[in-house]
Image (cartoon, rainbow, N blue to C red):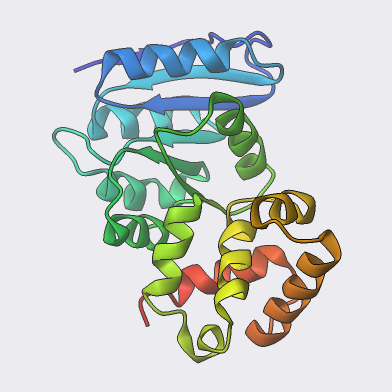
Length: 217
């Protein structure tokens, strides 16, 4: 069992305080090294199992828990559920790509679900985005939630609108969506407006949350 605490970030104990939870030492050390050189980010602890993660979360009060779902001794979903009352926002970083795992993670309280093949810079942006209160899902995770069924409102979305919604949930801007889909930005704006109207929500975050909350209906 590994439990460690302390700050490896360039900004000391200030900024976004991150607890890294993964049972692979190389992964933990790599994440700590990556985050340790980022402005305004501090790695305050590392854990390699669920009980250790809960112990450190209680002791260190991190802003973000970067959590793997495959942990010894206590399943990552159980850790998520136990962390709900802590106030920390949990960003799942996992190699478990089964759609049901993503759905369970979000319902257990995850503020984001990303996969371990994510670009390092994108991971740093994701941590900042989740810290700002956004819900962030990898495109594959968002797609699995939608295809699991998002209620009657989502059934009204066209195929292209579903693609746009998945990219919105991935934290993409209109410009990025336009580039990824090979369409004009004004076309993306029209799709976004249509998605919001069909789902009956006011903004992008609400659209992503709607898809997550109704993903298993």
